[in-house]
Length: 173
Image (cartoon, rainbow, N blue to C red; front, top):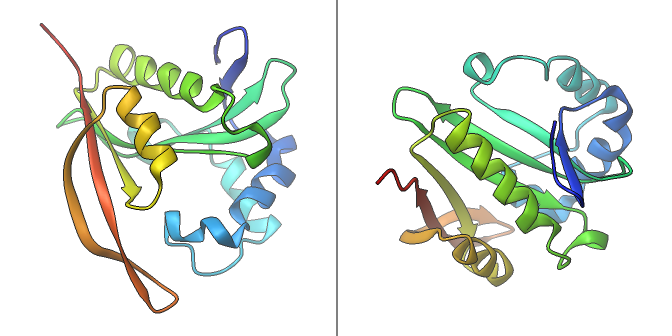
């Protein structure tokens, strides 16, 4: 478990099923993960039971962001893990009730430390919807650099939206 005084990053547990079900089925966030339909509890239960797979095998790592009292408040993911090129994508979602409290930033700092120091990654990248200024500010504050824009990258409800690409490259000097 990765932790500081405010939060923990921990593996998924069976008791996280209801929280995972709630977050994954919030339609307003489906555009973030290209979700097209609701997830069943059975499917998510199976996902949790397979979450023990090593990042080198699964090519992804999803951790629960929880308060020090173990209340889950969100999820943080490394995805498209590529050990050969030493890079991975990063995603985070924090429940609305816990946003703007610095908890997401704290979770991201822990995950970056883990990715660079334990997984020996060279770079982390994120995709941020052009309109999501909260995320832009958050990632820029964590020294992510904007490296491009993917025009009309997502199509949702008859509208194309662009996505910004940010990278954080490990300083090895």
